[in-house]
Image 1 (cartoon, rainbow, N blue to C red):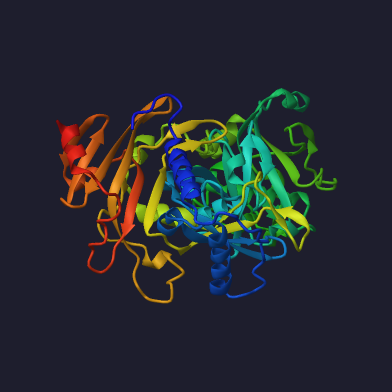
Image 2: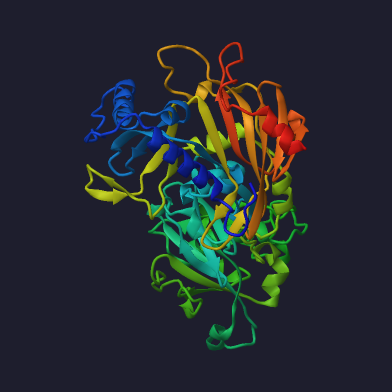
Amino acid sequence: FFLRKNCLSFLQELLAFLLDGLHEDLNRVKKKPYIEAKDADDRPDEEFAEECWNYHKARNDSIIVDKFQGQYKSTLVCPECNKISVTFDPFMYLSLPLPSTVTRMMTVTVFSGTGDSLPMPYTVTVPKNGVCRDLCKALSDACCLKESETLLLGEVYDYRIYRYFSPLELLHIIKDGDQLVAYKLPAGHEKLLRIEILHRNVDRFTPEPQFNARKLIGSPLVTCIPNDSTRKADIYAAVSAVLAPFVRAKVHAPGESLLNGSRPSLDGIVLKDNGASCEKGLSTSNVDEATSDAEFLPFKLYLSDDKGHIRNPVEEDSDHVFGLPMRLLMGWSDKEHEIYNLKYMDDLPDVFKPGFMSKKTRQEAVNLFSCLDAFLKDEPLGPDDMWYCPCCKEHRQASKKLDLWRLPEILVVHLKRFSYSRYMKNKLDTFVNFPIHDLDMTKYAKHTSGGDQPHIYELYAVINHYGGLGGGHYSAYAKLIEEDSWYHFDDSHVSTVNEEETRTSAAYLLFYRRVDGNSCAMADVVPVDTHMVDSLEA
């Protein structure tokens, strides 16, 4: 059990190779017949699964198949036409991902597009192979999104919106160092005019043409207005509303409003002393009052391109739609900084910081059933593993769902501790709490062999891996059935251990044997020569 260098994830492959070799040597079928694969054709699963198993047994019939092989059901669903394809295939062992390898923590800052709250970063857990729709769903739950709202997910780069994400884009294209934002907008915002607001510092004594030389600051804001409401007052009202949460808190006279006809001083623009929201004095319902007062707002807006370059100021009688969406540049002088608190727009967090919670994650334990659930979870196929839909006549990114249909007598479980991605390779030392006795797989087995007999398993061996990516050391625990005792095999050293000691964070391969009601059917699993054990101990 001692391997070095490039041995890391090869043990389960070596095991499969040995079992396949034994199967071929012991195969009772000497001349394998040609059998053409058939489709389910909407037949019952029981009928089609039995047919597939019989076809498999017609070519593969050995004690290895009898003892080690099971059958799983694979269901593919086309995202375009909803075509369902069902297949039943044999398996020799289960390769279970650890939850930390199938999920991903992502931090996204949620902004309000209506000005009812301050921006707030949320860290959520999403499927690593999921799509942006999964991320939006997790964010919606985290921020208590209303039914009348939806989230627009985007990436911010260099203080401007670099791109928006479509619901079916894969999450793996988003890097840990990216900065993501999500804007709460009204449902159906696609039918409205979207406004993007960029920010730059400006010196009031600097001529406007030199404004372009200054760098962008803060985080872009997004809001929406009706397509037919593009007057200067409409635009200023929408921008003022989305800026309302950033107003610094000050005491004001009750009922005082910015647009109440009195043209109050700048100190009177805060309408709630908590700075969290503002009265709707600037809403589009008050446009008539706002028209003559927009010039008294404490900021000035300019039409801009996506780089933040000024085109011209927002004027009453000009064409304000400079491309879609409408992009505005807001100049921030010292006076605006006194009125609005921009610290909430600074320093967007990265999607994930390396090392953040990593030590805690390594210490957290998961159980074997959570690994099974992760293995059987419905998930979309990767972009390099597209499925050819026979109805669409095109390759589609279908969703795939696995189910265990037929369970073997000897159940081998491979814990996938080695994680590979485009950017890194890693070994996971997560402790997996697996049952030693009474592993109940009944609820996972869709096929019951015509009866209600439970699928209960007992652990009889564990293979461990110690080390990292550059090399490793293997050891094993095995149960001597006749003595009902456990032994630790570490190179030439053999010692007795308590069964609880077999559960460690190094567990890599688990071997279970299905037992009957008397729990005594394990004696024929692996005959052990006790004299050999004694000689090794000596």
